[in-house]
Amino acid sequence: MRLYSTKSPNKFVDLKEAVFKGLPADNGLFMPEHIPTLPKYFIKNLKKYSFQEIAYKVTKTLLNGAIPNKDLKKIIEQSITFPAPVVSLDNQYHILELFHGPSLAFKDFGARFMAQLMSYFNKGEDRKLTILVATSGDTGGAVAAGFYKTPGIEVIILYPSGKVSNLQEKQLTTLGHNISALEVNGTFDDCQALVKKAFLDKECQSHLRLSSANSINISRLIPQSFYYFEAFKQLEKSRKKTAFCVPSGNFGNITAGLLAQKMGLPISHFIAATNANDVVPEYLASGTYTPRPSVPTISNAMDVGNPSNFARMLDLYQSEWGVMKDNISGYAYDDAQTRVGVKEVYDKYNYVIDTHGAVGYLALKEYLQKNKTHRGVILETAHPSKFIDEVEKVLNKQIEIPERLAILANKKKVAKFIEPSFDDFKAHLLSLD
Image 1 (cartoon, one colour):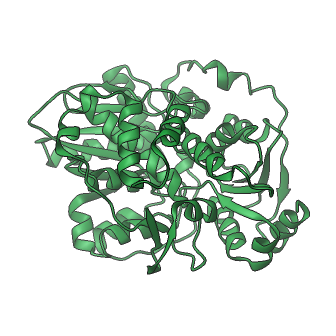
Image 2 (cartoon, one colour):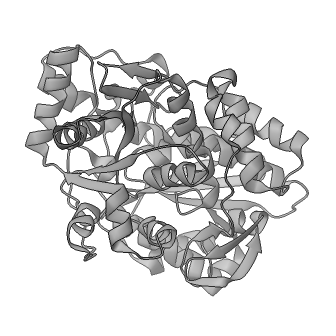
């Protein structure tokens, strides 16, 4: 398997280099040289395979011998250890629950796979690997859980001060050992910019072995494609076309879905659902991409004003706006509308959805009004208890907190507060050398 940068399509690296570098030197993003198509019999017979078997087949086909089959099976077995069930609200609305992993968020799939893959490639290295990750909420918790106590790997999580929920923050700041947190006096975009600058800084690169666990890293996207296949497997056969509605922030999740579609999964349409940070829906409507500073919302994991993975989306569509907008519809909703969505899903279906899933529900509802021959799958990206204050206020009822999250409530937060200055961040990194 070879990969290229979205900014240098004629220069290639192998999988190990792409995974460890995270970001190419030209500030592009790594993409597979070739996206193979899975056999039609496999797609037709998904119900015959377990989730792990599906994940293995998809990865084996995509990686094309980059990792021996025996080692690849072990990576899958140790990372895909929890389900991704589909809950049907009715015959048109379906929920793909992606919160059954250790951090109660969809990013557990990518983080655990990445941790196993990096651990595999890191064998025999005598220098510590330092992983940098910017988070708007869920990424940090998933990465912290996935890499916790992994030998030879240290994780530094950057998160925006005051812009993640209390329990999300505890997931980032209470583990210790090889996990540390930096509380940045800024936005998620500031955190992401600091991480990107570190990868492009020659002094940082010469003193540290750096890698990233954000969705800019290709090893995050590969496992996120698995659950699109798993969802399709669970849906009853229907004449209706299937659209996937993806609550979107940095757009890694929808990019993984596009990868699954390219590999042969018959997804009819994608719906990109955002909060007030609507630069991609705006692009889909107008053809003009105008990144801007993110604004805080009650669906904070989507508070991204300049989504990194948009570059991969452009690459997949060869920058053809017309082709992209035919396959992806974009919708955006404010906080007041999001609260209405949370309440409507509960009142109508007796289902408790989180604020991000509620944005997805509203987008699917609007899409289905004009596309009645479709059914939709909403990606429920996090357990509602992670946003308990907002959800309980809207529903006026107590939400049960899973034990693995509840035990964090009384743990002491440990984080270093920094300004969004690259010089300060760089000095912190170099002090760790």
